[in-house]
Image 1 (cartoon, rainbow, N blue to C red):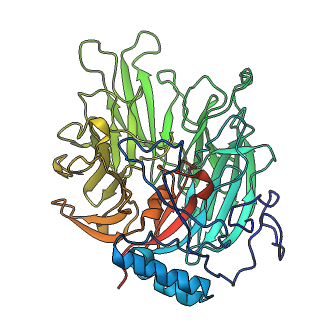
Image 2: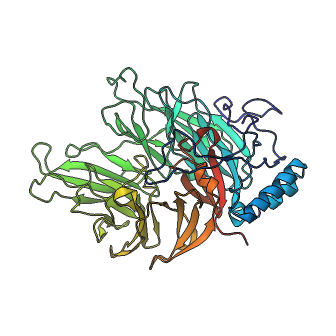
Image 3: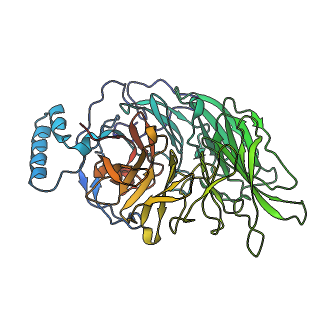
Length: 530
């Protein structure tokens, strides 16, 4: 990092390099950890459009002189006499050189204490023609939280936020384009390319940052990018060489692009298995996660056969189907079976599908047999059921908590709500009132089956909250409140990740009210301070 807390260039590709005592692009040696001065308040930033349905607001951001290991940014001073007194006391202490004592007094509110540490947003070079680079891929280990950046990966200590290592992707002109959230075996996989084709994979040891292997993805030999082409994460046009999205499950990663699906071993990048081909079935799409699900369009005969769709649970080690569920067309046209064209896999464990045909509704399959477990009723819980995540991964807007399946959905006019279904019966258990001021993010991989949800409030006066919902009734209680600076300093699509009772929010772009003073990563407590 640079001396002002802005991430600088990565060390050369191939692994982390020893950091010098001083110099551009590197953090200071570990151990110091002085906290930065309090950030200054800002008025609403000009030229920045708010989130749909969100009123413009002002906020605080990290101070330009922030130390490399960014400490929690304090919340804005509370309005009224009490806030004025605190501001006067802090000003006197800072001017008088009180240092740590001043920070002790400033961090007196529960919201401030809920912030453990933060890192500033990405300030590196953007690909040609792009002002915003959206990159998925945030992983955790027992010791670190690791972020995928446009030009590499960086790891930070879970407890302190100190940078542990940073490794650039191969090639000075290359940029990342996709990174699945799964990291089994302590290995992270990133797809990257040169802005004309996203056609390489690289694997990293998440404990050390060491580059383990690289692999070129062979696209169609006769396909050439058009002048000026650049890849776009999440783009799924099958005729464009720029597309390669990833599905990862267990020890296998499956790439899906213009060359069709290809499976590689996470351990060394060698081919894992050849995706099954059939004269009756067209190219398949894969979705990873805790399980690997394949969807493909088929016909009873190669020529003039009746159409049907297959959904299969695939063994990641062999590529063979453990079971297959068949969807056949219904209705007058008798052409659309509902899944292969426009259908989506919301979750792979449990298996929850969202067919393209509205009359089918949302369907849960039994993970052991592939038979229909339930059909959700009502068929769709709101006007909009959609994801902002990339192809090949389970939806980030949905999570299973025991037998309760929770989703964030939207009504008209950007009114968001949370809905919960019983996976066995398909019954709608409860739903919250549509709310234009909230974004809901159900948290996956939480212990005890508790329905935990990170709620981003589109407000200038109130920060985000961590809430727990009763799985059966939807009764809500607040577990933690966070400063308004958490929302103001993060892009609107920041992703939550949970590890060791800590909530990490990772920015995947710089869509904040001031990209020059944004958080890239922030660690939050998951319960209110004692």
